[in-house]
Length: 65
Image 1 (cartoon, rainbow, N blue to C red):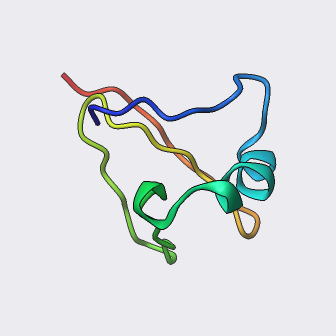
Image 2 (cartoon, rainbow, N blue to C red):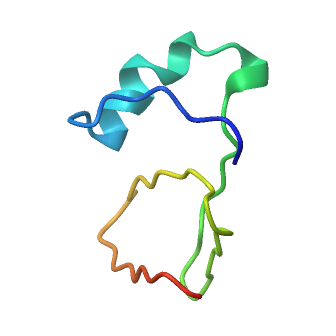
């Protein structure tokens, strides 16, 4: 959370994955996970994240606190 990622605000997550991700050294690559139906992922306050839907999806986003 203390490192701001390098991204272009008008670039999609898919474009970032295709163009920027392959150039990152292994130590700078983000953590990755795939959620399955019924699973939930919580991001603590101020954690940078991006999502890429692999199939038709619905998501809910809210700010707590």
